[in-house]
Image 1 (spheres, helix red, strand yellow):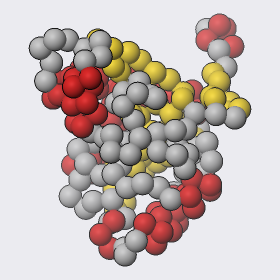
Image 2 (cartoon, one colour):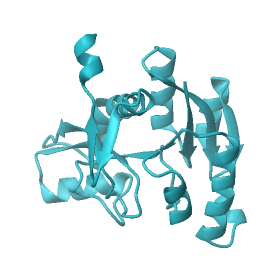
Image 3 (cartoon, rainbow, N blue to C red):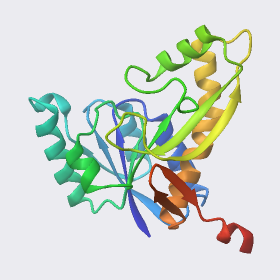
Length: 214
């Protein structure tokens, strides 16, 4: 059973999706053992405590730069025996210290179909604003491994969501979360915890043998 540590900064809707999947017995091969927040007032901490999940706070504002913050966060992850790190609305860019220490053990969910609408500046509601401005007909979500390149790591899962003519950024954001993010994030976590993911170069491959035997 792998230890899953979730990093958060805000409301924690994706954390809640993971907690719900765990309580339904759908989080296979792993367990959420700790939630670490970069902000002491993050509502995600209340979500974790409501389900008896251990929490820690490593406040970003207490550190003068990203390097010193990443060092403190690395120590916390080591102390929690993290096998998998999930970024769930974590608003601090991880530096190479953590990425190298946990190579192919950090995953993130992004609210678009990478490589579209991703990279520097594309986060939260801004992604959906740009999707609507461009007039694309399909958007969605992507779960990927985290590398030194922002939103550039190997893609694990993607799910498309239809864009509707009367969408606002807020409406589209909610649909992408409900129809894509909250579905593929728990599945990607399960695939990792079941040792069914292999990374070769810039691509992630899924072992489907277990699905065929079920």
